[in-house]
Amino acid sequence: MTSKESFVNLDSWLKEVEKNSTENVNVLVIGNKADMEEDLEVTDAEIKKFEEDHSLKVMKASAKTGKNVDEAFLEMTKKLIVKKQ
Image (cartoon, rainbow, N blue to C red):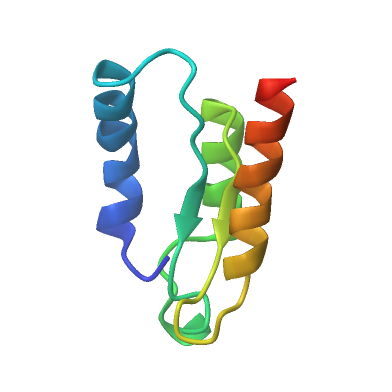
């Protein structure tokens, strides 16, 4: 979330995923570097709008501190379990 450019590129990356995968692909967007609050370039409002526009969940995480890393894996696991049922 410290790179506005990466956030803007999400649209084109999602199009590539759609183009190169089956229609049943699960997507979870994880924004790294949530620990660097003073350097964040993407606002919560922008994230919320992205989530609404794409019907996707965005999670903020930090590989450095481990914040929300386990939660992101649990979220994806839940999606896969629901999908299988």
